[in-house]
Length: 523
Image 1 (spheres, rainbow, N blue to C red):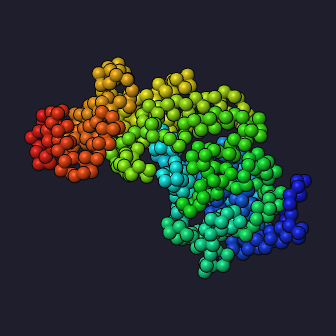
Image 2 (cartoon, one colour):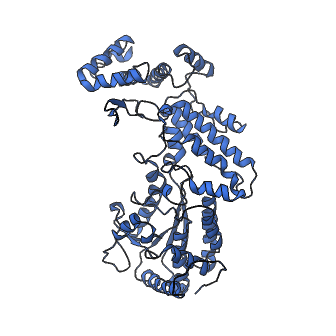
Image 3 (cartoon, rainbow, N blue to C red):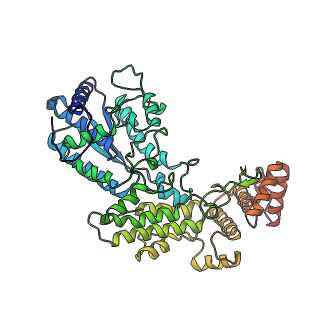
């Protein structure tokens, strides 16, 4: 066996040969299973202790096979959410590079893959671009976009090309009661050593958890006793765990039954499903070399607080509509709040870019060119603001310049821009007294002008009145309190609501909408 003793104290079971016997048994199982069919393997790798132990067992087992028997492809997938704890993300990236080099040298059929979310699914694009409020237990929009979709898309591609696949996971029953129950739900397979996948979308994917019955002590004893075959130092992994407070890792997530990374040791530093990112705080506290992460922790705590974020959010939903719900304490009606306000989204982008610049200015070896947010994401945020939200101010270039001192590299996003900077300032001045982009009157006028502009070059203007009516209805109030009363009126009966809407349309001199009336299109 590829074995190397590392001088480190660890609590061992009564039988000193227990871990060696377990390793021999699992190694035999892996070799037997690997050679039993032609199904490709996909191994989930997060860079934590469990996935490292799982991959190391598979790698070392295959090394014992003759080279001509190592014919079946093994993919090692690691999903980078792009908002991971940066220390872990850097470690995983180095590890994947080492795997690629070592696999070639050792003639192993192992292919490491770093998976990332699609641009439209990324955290900053949805939080700052679309204005999704920071994730919370009742609105956990991040997990599927950042974790589940990239891994499942890759796995399904493998399945489509091969009919079936085997997913090798470092999950353990000993991790938690919930995880144990989840693992037991996989049992009962007709294939020896394999379990059914509990996710119906992955019904052609079998689960193989080689360390399912191991304890934490088993995992650590194995890692510090057996040499890492792709050249990493498992001692460094142990030290990384020692730098934090709890003993759990962020696993590969393939369905929503997997616990949130926020409940584990290493996950997304922006996770708001927990009060504090204890792992990052512990790293900063325990190691002065990790103090460069302070701007990240500060941004997370200051701008992603979900305890009372209603003042930062629009009282209208993402589509501009109003939705009522009952207040649990008073029993009265209240409005369900929607996305972050334009001013708050602009503030978050500014402070995020400033935090990125602050980290870069520290000149810490290994984080040169560190990115909290990519240029591609910044430009996508700009596109959403201008094209989808009608925020004609196009504030991203100015925000970028203020935060970095550099000119924004991308060209104008709107060549046919209706208003210039001075025009927008005048429009704000006429529409409101606060000069705020969140002012309801300003937003209403801006949206009406943008609708007219979008239809100005159309040969037929069918649909313009419907859009104008929708814009007027969504902005037909002075403030949140008036909007609440409007929503109550609408809920009381559709007839009354339509009458009130028509009063607004008449006030602005807009024709009543009739699908069959085309003569007004030319007016």
